[in-house]
Length: 365
Image (tube, rainbow, N blue to C red; front, side, top):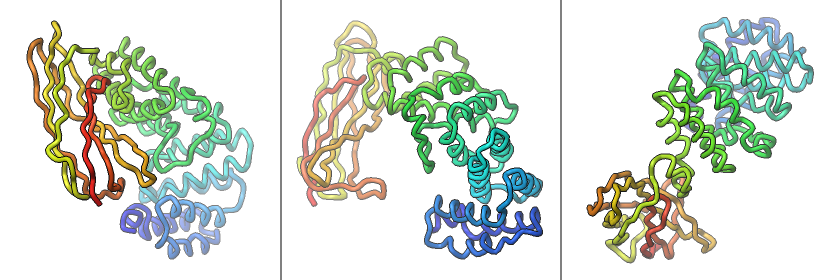
């Protein structure tokens, strides 16, 4: 597994072992050391969990004793990168298991101290699952930190659908509970932080799109130079789904259009081939039309059902009486992230959230 090896392979695990041997010279680190040889067949997260468990076995004392060793290890300049993930995970496990206010608060503080070495976004999920409101209160305080890594952790670690992470059921059960944190960060000076805010709000839009539109409307009422770009990124999923309010917020109002197409260059396509479609769009209204043009490929699934995936095509402004032509080739080459099945397919044109017809073709096996 070269990807996992590049991130959390023997080199990173070896750094972790050497750092802990220096920070805790009297500890029995044999289980941790032995874990290095067992990484080979494991995926990335499983590797982090294996090394976390080895570390917890090696340092079985109280949370306070454990945290003291970790802070000692953090004085080593080599203690950074992916070797830190098992450590932050172990900090969270130890603090939550102890189940005291002091361990909880110090564990969160220690994650903030370590997050500049490798984001603590995965580890914070244990605290969120244990006590969401207490965790969010601490994360809210992080939004005023002078360290952009800590401010980003407040947003990234609390995302509803953070990639590679465990879900936090109470965040999903209370949609929008994290928006107050985003309100504090959307005008942050750091692009690193603002990108996290946009991705977080895009996560929220999966469950409560109307809340996201209301939130971004508020932000645009009190913007800075970066707010419009952030909002566009935050609304990308609801825009693809044709949410009219989101489209209008970004200036894509209903338009008086005549559309010819989409027209396909083939009616049958071999697996792995490309289909090309064209369309002509004319503004028959009296005002310039700002248009967001997408297309939806409706795929046949393994069970014979149909599922659609939206792709961005272009954004244009069409003056009254004028028309534009669009053209796109779409490939059906097999991907690791998508499998194609033979059967009927179609391409649908969507402009400012409105469907303008579709064209059918057959994908052959």
